[in-house]
Image 1 (cartoon, rainbow, N blue to C red):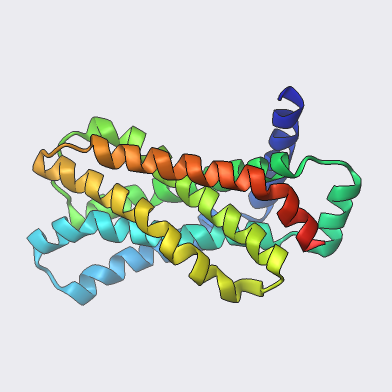
Image 2 (cartoon, rainbow, N blue to C red; image 1 turned 120 degrees about the vertical axis):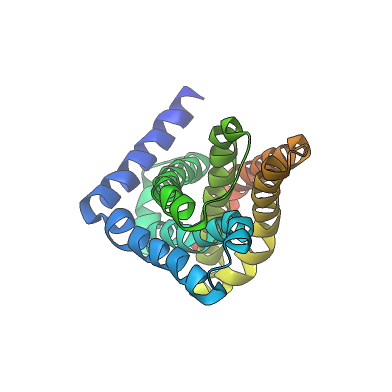
Length: 223
């Protein structure tokens, strides 16, 4: 397992180094995400109670749409020659999947953290129980990162290009979006949220197990 995590850390470090060099998350994607959050109040109007109620859901939708694009772009950066070279180097496919998921999770965490203050300023959500947010954020971001990584590997294995991504991401993202928005809604209304948090944990574990176990056959199919 120590070798597994060393390989995963090396893959994550490689992906994050490439992102630091390009700066696309902070310089390109994050501003577009902030603009998307700004356009929603312009379309809905100045109904403050309505904006406060739909704000958390709109925040997670924007994080999903733009965040998955960030993760998929990182996965698409590896073409067939790169995958063949990785196979010749003897890198464990499961470790490579874990490393890519870790890097995608870090990028999505930065993206979500940058958009958080923007969403609060625009929608002014009246939430109680802010102490739960540091638990909610990693659970949701990890699920989205794992989902995007799985989708990237599947599209590479099927050689279908980006056209299959919406069909893969949309249905699998429903539990994540539902859990994240219902946790925030429960905090707002003072209702129990433990069940929704357990849903997020279950989805994260299912995606992680599916990705690790399916990494080798997917890599062989992609060659």
